[in-house]
Length: 247
Image 1 (tube, rainbow, N blue to C red):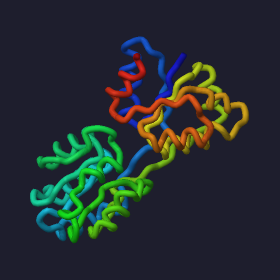
Image 2: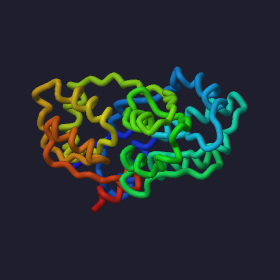
Image 3: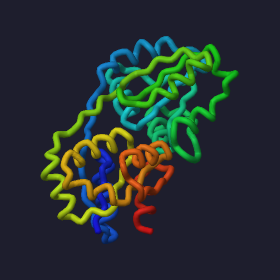
Image 4: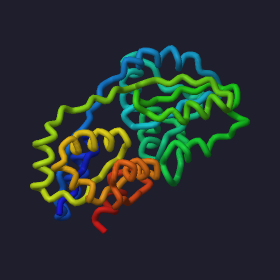
């Protein structure tokens, strides 16, 4: 039995190495890659307009990475007078590393809904917020903040590029490797995997594989696409995924 890891680089490769180190067979399939977003050029202007106790939200570590590269190139530091929020502890630790400031993030179930629940609606009304994310990111946070009376600026800090995949060769390769478990960490990756693999009727055996996902929302999507053996772990870190796989 082999586990298919679809996490983007570098996390996907690292997770495969962790599994190989304890004797668990795994196969890495890279479906997407990243590049700087065209909206990064707007970030400087938006940060300069922030006032005391305004907010910066980060929904992924890639968004923080590319935002930080842009700010460094322009000799701009992360402002100290705003409140920082992150989707989870991993993203929060990276944002803290780059900004040097305290970060608020959910302690359990690292998703947008949980992040929204941490907000004090009275305190944020009439404030401004910057959301650092990608083109395909969920709009729930933006919509909820607007409903709460917040002026929102969403910055697409990075773009997601779909790797060209030969679905016939990949389907054959996965079957040869006796793939029985799939690890999927985003809806975008799940949809792309489904699109690539299930073009051919010959590859529909993959729907019988166990699929490990990182949220209820992703589990619902997997079920709608045809999977039934679904396990949810509310943590996107390699460590948590690894501990789940070795049990």
